[in-house]
Every structure is written in C-alpha cells, then in structure tokens.
Image 1 (tube, rainbow, N blue to C red):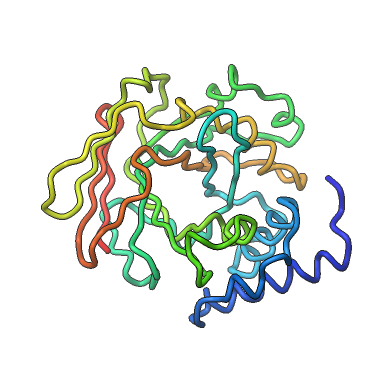
Image 2 (cartoon, rainbow, N blue to C red; image 1 turned 60 degrees about the vertical axis):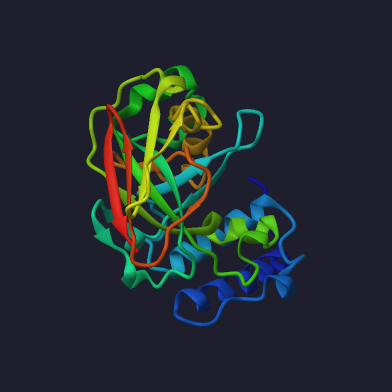
Length: 262
C-alpha cells in the first residue's frame, strides 16, 4: 500500500474531525465545504480507519463487523468497518442511536469461522472463501449520513462516512450453506403494510462473492481477521424508508428473520 503523504493526511483529518463532531451530537457537516478534500479511495479508507479509532475501536485490531458489496460483479467492491455500538440483535429498538434518516436495506450477513491471516487472505479465491464461513443470518442495515447532502454527497465523502452506515441489526445465525441464490426470496414488511417480496435480487448474485476482496482489505494493515468476524453483503430490496415508530421485519426463507423498531 502506498503511504499517504502528510498533506493528504491533513485533509483526511479535516474530514474525520467533521464526521466525528456529528457522531458526538453536533449538526450535520457541510459536504460542499469538504468537496475536493479527498481525491482517492485510499484517502477515503484512511478516513474510515481514523474515524473508527476515534469512535473507540481497538487500535491495531481487525474490526469484528463490516459491510461490503457492489452493485454488480463488474463494479469494484467497497467496504466499511462498523462501530460496535451500532451492532444490535434482532428485535432491538435503535432509537438511542439518534439516526437522522429512516432508510434501510435487507441483507444477508456472513460469519467467519476461524482466524484468517493477511497472508492467507491474499491467496483466497471465491472457490474456497466460503469454506472459511461457519454461519449466516438475516441482517438489516440502517443507513444514515453525517453529511448535509445525505445520499447526494460526493462519493468519496460518503465512503469516508462508513458508506452511510447507521446501524446493523442481526438475526440468529444458522450454519452457512451454498444456496440457489437466484431463487432466494427476501420478504420485507414495514408496519402493517403488505409484504414486499424480492427474488434473486442481490446485484452480485451470491453473498459470498464479497469475501476475497473484503478479506484482503480487512487484513491489509497486518492484523489477522478473528473467528466470529461478520460482514453484511449488500441489499436485496434497494433502499426503503420506514415511517417513524414503525417496525420492520425481514425474512429470507430457509435462513431466518430479523426485525427492528425505529
């Protein structure tokens, strides 16, 4: 990895401090005033690392919870480590997180069953990455933005903002098994509204497709990935909005359910 020059790290720190102030209860940051401070994905990922550390992550350790994905297999995967305080069990009320948006994605999360070293991560391919898994579950990712522009903020600023992560709600884990993902249903219910069903709608086709690139990214600083590390793998339902006070239930038949109340 090419080291980031001192001047570039100064601009990274400016972005991090602005995001941190919002996490600490301050007003949304002005994305237009920060436009142009980040020029590369490497800088955006450096901002993620610094922000996570400022939010209390253990220095030098590989984070235990992640999001990773891409719209399609021809797109470059993007990754973000997730703050521990926002990872919740199914059925949780997440009102204490003071999220500014009520947007969510229905996803499948995968759990690594043993330690993965940086050296091993470098040589892992899709054909063997799934053998490192011991579990999967239904997950609901709540999206949020610390930028005033929200979803319209510049891409690198959204990437620095942990890819607009708000919280991750996890259902019960079941043993991982390969499935006919193109035939997999995802059922979403918001409040008392009718169930919405999405079939085979994950853009990358197979949730495990994220594993090789994600494992290399997560271990790039030299720390091994611990057994029990979890990655949520992208939306099956696009981005949906839930009215305040309403419950969300997501079901993937054959895998399980997850629910939350906003």
